[in-house]
Image 1 (spheres, rainbow over the protein chains, first blue to last red):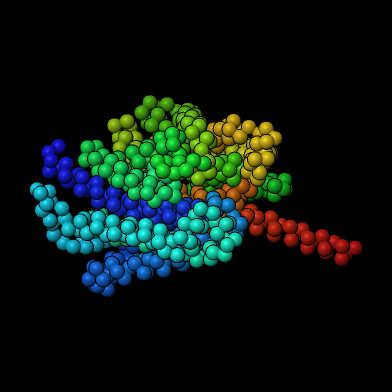
Image 2: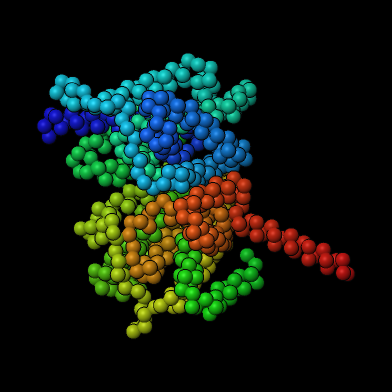
Length: 291
Length: 320
């Protein structure tokens, strides 16, 4: 492995780490606030990519940055609708966590099947955010990857500020700490949930939009990404944003090196192995609380 | 479950081939109903009664399929031994999965077993060197035989029906045994049951194994009936179909999963003409049956049965 290849693998690792971080943070946010395991998270990844494709290359022929900006409010709306029609009925129905789990599983299938019905099985290609490459100290980085990492960092900082500084963010943290307590002091739980799902959906969809130019878009493209994001969330500790970010970086790099040395298909099985070992050895993850 | 209804349905199922013996499509579909009915019921035993959310059942099914297929193809042993070996392997894997999983709490079990399910297709398609046949899988698997007689659709039907009834009987017996009571008490009030001294771990492990063996027998039968197997049996659509069978039939209601299997398989066949919309409808069924009919089909049937009984009783009093 010469330095150039090493650099290439590092950049590849950085790119997938960034995407996994975005997916994992979106997932862990919903888990943290509502203790809801959202299977449909991968479906929103797929839909983010499809909507961006529809707006740019597919039908509307908007330029990519405009399409990107338009997709975000659409995704936010989708997330709110999802919470309203899929999650809220089971949440207030006095049903257990497992019922919500299965509803989101059904919703994941529904989202994939809907994509299949609307867009067909043919793979779609999304243009890169910015074309061309940059040469940096001997390493070649594509502009797309650079923008991708920058956007992810910006979103993450924005989210942390949002959670820490704003009224809504504080409400979300309060609900995640003690839902009944938050309800007693009169917090609008339904609105907090809707907001959380909206943000989470945006994060999943943006990951889809950002990675789609590198892979391709097809129904079910979000599943492996979602599963890996999930392993990351468990490693970081369910509900911990800081843990997710660090774990995303560790596992993203691990995957890049696995892909280089053994082959890309082994990514998911090795992640699953990590997950199994982790669940037995330290189920609460790196930064999660025991219990 | 009412004795009369049980007897009538067994009778109907055993007479059906006499009516449809020329229609291989219906026969084939019914045999699939028996197989998936058995698998879904065994799964329901774990999820609905033991309350362990294991998603590894289809992986266990696939292990049994591959075990039986590989030893009959490579070692030339009889398919009957293949089915037994498949069931044994399935039971063993069931215990191996059960050991760590039962120490974990609800959601983590679901994830660990799902991880197994998702990692499995890659192992199968990469394991060509070990005889799994890679992505294309294995074909030309020998059918079941007794002496010189090779099983056709007719004999497969009755064998499948026999296995189906046998597994339902075993599951019924477990549910109505002290074990079943232990599970129901654990499911409905975990801390109280534990404080009364119900040993959760041992019971659950045994039921994990039994459920895996039933799934394994069905897998062995499946592979010698279809006579081909590939990693495609681990695709999401089949996985979700079996979950839909459980939910639609009624989670934790005894013959629910079996009834759900018949309903979902025939619905699935009826939806063939609409092509890709099939999966969409299945997704909607899972969501809607969870949101609006948490008792499942069996709950609806029971309430219909109750109202019929009430109406007929009402008539009796009127006539008197």
